[in-house]
Image (cartoon, rainbow, N blue to C red; front, top):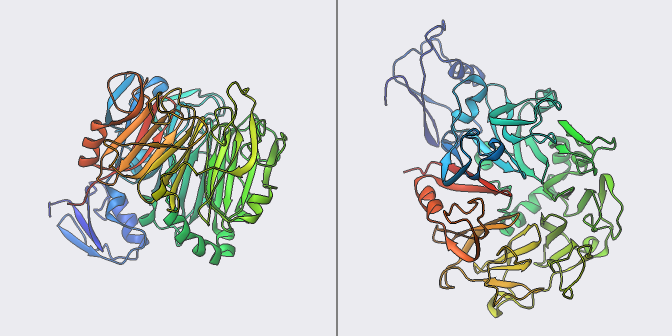
Length: 518
């Protein structure tokens, strides 16, 4: 071991720098001293010599201290985290920020959640010194997406720590982030006590962002646990929403155009929520017992209640199909939603101008919408007809499903190649099978949002289709890709630093990466 480092053995070995603190009487760095004190370890005889500390300490894992964040695409407003000088990035670039106490979570590789809205990016990790989750952000802040400034800070050109009275309150103490998600200009997060949501699991929560890595098997496995612990979770979950709120999309009974200090939605906490998804101006929450609660705008029946009345507070969706089914996953597009049931069926509702929910005649107006109904899966290949759906997704005007056989299907608009099918073979109003490579390459998971789709295959490669006008696919040529293209820049990144999550936005992408343990 190198001098000036120390090691903690907790299933895996962790290495930390800066053991010695030049001005401290106990000769230890503040971070190490805090660590030792809070875990009741004796630091009196520890100095600058090489040491090994062995302790069964909850919540520590090697992956926590080796995460990196990368970004690519358009750099306008500083949303890539590299300042205003970086107007575009084709090859994903690691985000690095200055060394200081405010940035220690970022610099120590402990970011474990990422998300991006239309013109901004947010990152989060657990700060052991503060004993709470902390948030960072960059990009546009005109609708309070980045929490700080109270209207005086229109944008953040570089990444900064996002603090507010709510985020610094005692209610945040000991809470670990389960989910971080963005709509177009509003955001939400779910935090649980660390007993139920250890840091070991944080890296595997997708969320993304995106969104978007919601595996049905995981949801099924978690469902029984959530039901068994429903009462416990109600007391422990903290659900915060912030950003644009003019349509009621943060769930507060009081009207405000924007919400800077994250709103503590106690209604959702009392219900017991395990996942949130967001559209353009609405929000839907999935409860531990498989029910859906919606709030925000309902111009296109986004809320699923069969009417056009906005809701300011969370309301159980009043629909027979949803009452009759247990929901295990959901994803919101701009103005529509897809939901997966426990018996492997897909429900959908909302705006339907591009047949993203069910077939509509050519020339149907932009105001077309539908009530809750089953998505027609009769066009699936024969071997997929009865196979389990392991992931669902949505983007602006599209819906997607992934089967356990590794086949992905798309429905909706193909104007920007979002369906991954050539114009000549595209069929509107039905699920189109997306062929990866020669058609035999299988998909492990996918990320879909706005007009771009990225998939990871079972052999560890990345492919993508849709809009690349701002290099969202990390490809040099600015164009529409109607069929999947192999993304070699992402393949190289994944080989060097495992991609564990991707958040796709309108004109940029960010990824969360972990150091492969070799």
